[in-house]
Image 1 (cartoon, rainbow, N blue to C red):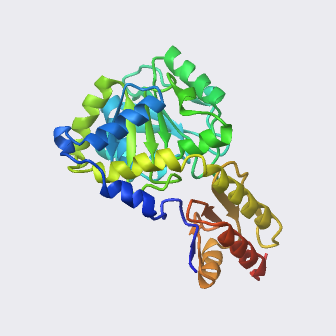
Image 2: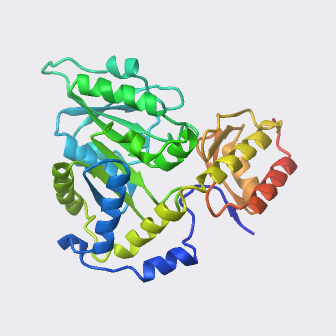
Image 3: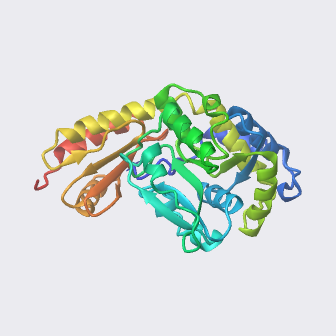
Length: 339
C-alpha cells in the first residue's frame, strides 16, 4: 500500500465522478457553447455571490488572469511573502503583467490591515502604483492557516477606502470555510475577484473557476485565450468539478481531523522539533533534514513533501483513509532519527 501525503492534488476520480464525466453534455467552450461548463461557472458564481465565472485549467492560471485583468505595467501587488502567487507561479506576475510585488510578513501568512497600509506607496514618478491586494486562504506555506471572515472583511473595507482592488486566491477556500463553519455566501461582496480551486481538497482531476463581475470575466476570457487556456469540450472536466462541489465539501472535516491526529503524533516524536498549528488539512513540521525524513518514509511506502531543507509537509485528502492514518502514525513512531 502506497500512502501519498505530498498534496491533496494526488487524488483520483472515483467511480461516481467518472460516471458524471462520461455522461456530461458537451459543446465547444471557446465558442461559449459547452453547457456543462456554463453550469459550473454559474453554480460557483452563485455560491459566492458573484456575477460570473470562468473555468480554467489551474489555480495558477486563474490567479494570473486576475492579476493581468486588474493591473497594467508599473502597478504593484501587495501580498504575503509566503503566498502562492509570489512563490509558486513562476514569477507570472512579472512575466505576464509587468507588475512588481511588495511583501508583508503575516502570522503564518495571514496579513493584517496595518501591515498592508504601511506598504502603500505614495504617487511619485520613481515608485510603482499600489493597485492590488491579494490574499491566499488557506495559506499553503502557513500550514493551512486560515483568514477568518472578519479578517477578510476588515481588509476588504480598507481596500475600498483606499481604492485598491482585492483578490482572493481561494486555492483551498472550502477547507477554510469548513474550519470556520461558514458558507461561501459569507464572502459575498468582499472581493473584486476570487479564484476557487476544485482540484485540491475537493478531488476533481482538473480545474479552477475565476469569479468576478460580468465585465471582469469578459475581459478575463480573452486573457485566458492568450494564455492558452481556451478549452473545447471541457464539460468533461467541469462535470467532475460539479460532482466534487455537490459531494465532497462536507467530508473535508474528516481530512482536518486526520491532519490534527497526524500533528498530535508528530508532536510526541523526539526528532520533530516543531509542528505548525493545524487548522485544516496541511501539516508542516520541522526536522534536522527533510530529505532524510522523506527518504526514510518513502522506504515504508509513505510519500511526503520536503518543503525546505528542514520542513516537511503532509496533506490529508479524500484518498487518505482511516486505515492509512493509523499505518502512518505507527510508521512515524517507528522511525529512529537523531534529534
